[in-house]
Structure formats: structure tokens, C-alpha cells
Length: 317
Image (cartoon, rainbow, N blue to C red; front, side):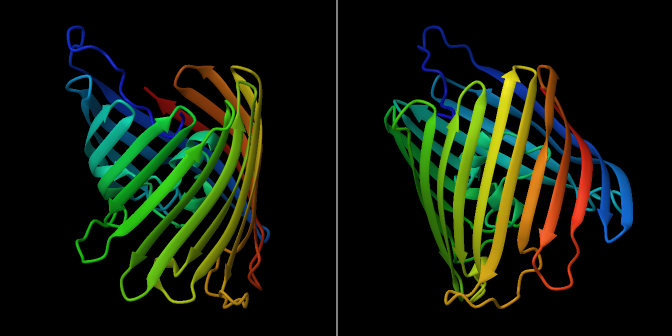
């Protein structure tokens, strides 16, 4: 499964403890045009630095630092470092248990299937539905090769804000592959402080050596635990790989903020459409280069369409 990789089932007689460094860097050159005004920037938008270690065939640990440019290359770089992951994992006989600062189960499969995090986050991550990592406990069980379930109890604030309070986020997901290479997933979570926040996601995707196509629907009520701040979102993406070193891709996102009765309350400035298309070149293992264009077409009255032309790069060990 793409959703999560378990440890290899090695026998204790042949196992040797081992580790590996983790280093991934996202960088790009961007030309952004909005209402006749153009901004140009080189940026190193993010770097992941860390280490993973296998203590035994069933126990491992991982620690990763996330170094992020808060200004996205404009008005001077301002890098901030966070601990993104710091957790231990037990994995055996289809059961995986993570504890600590773990990757969340909200959109990790969508991010893996989209496969181009270095140039654009997956839909829920991009629009603040949830964080990609959080402090808590996660369990996944592979019931049969075609079906897995997962559940987490986490802090709910994300890895950039780990304050303690009485509220936690409870989530559960189910991933089903009725046939090889076809993925169906449903997910939901719940968190309440003064107001409740709930999230629902349904996704279908197909991925083989040459084609990836997928789509998802996302609903979140009480966004950031604020009454009547409700999100509806759609995302569709596709990639064609004619060979191992070259791909063509496209993606369409739509985000709306509505009350449950359908009336817009105008609270979200980023409602609208996002169009993304480009090429991906893989000249060597661990290197990805993507000339791409991203068009943001906001629906809020008075907002201007913004077009960004980028050459995005990813380097990883």
C-alpha cells in the first residue's frame, strides 16, 4: 500500500540494526503576475533534515526537522525551524503503532498519489484542513491485502503549535483496493473546544507505471473551531509518464466557504479555483525538476487572478 510502509519482516537471526539520514530540499524560481504587477524570486521554500533508525525487525524511530521560509522568497527570507517528526514505531503482522510527533492520516495517501509536494501541497494541506504531523498516537491495521483501517488520537494543533489543552482530535480512515492499483478511501475526524470541528474526505484514485488519476471531496465544518466557518472542496489530478524520466501533469482545485444552509458568509479570502499544469523531469535518483504554471482565480469580489510561472526543484537522499 502507498498509505504507509511497514518494516521488512526480517528474522532476528539475520537482522542488523541500521539507520539512514534524511535530507530533502525544495527550491524554485518563481515569476508571479497579479493585476499587471510582477514579482520575481529565487527561493528555498523548505528543507527536511533528519534520521531514521531500525532497532529491531519490529521497532524503529524517526526524527525530522522542518526548515521553512515563512516569506516564500519575498521581502527577504525568514527561515523558521520546527521538529516535524519525532516518534517510535512498532510494526508486525499487519499492525503498525506510532507514538510521538507522528505523521497524520488526514491526507498522507493523497499526498503520496499526487507525488508533487515539492511544487504544490495536496488540497487539504494547502487549504489548512489539518496539519501533516501532530503529537499523539496512531494505529493502522492491514486486515487483508485489499483493506486497511487506521485511527489516531492527536493534539489537533499541528506540529507548529504543540500547546497542551483538554481538546484532542480523534480520526479514523478506511482504505480499500478492490483491484490492484485502484485506491478508495474515506476519512473523518472530530475535535471540540468551544465549537466543534469535523472533517470528512472521500477519495478515489488509480495509479500504475504510466498513469495516475485521482479525485477527492472534502468537507470541514467549524474550521479552526469557529461556528459557521465551513469548507467544501474538490481536487482532481492526473499524471502521464511516457517513460521513467519524464511526466506531464495537471491538477484542478475548487474551494468554497459556506454556511450549512448554503449561504456564503464571505469569511475566507482564498475561495475559488486553482489550476496547475506542468512537466516533471527526473534526471537522476533523488532529483526532480518541474517547469510548471499555477493560476489562482479567487471568487471573492475585488480579488485579482494571479498567475505564477515556476521552475521547481526537489533534491533528496
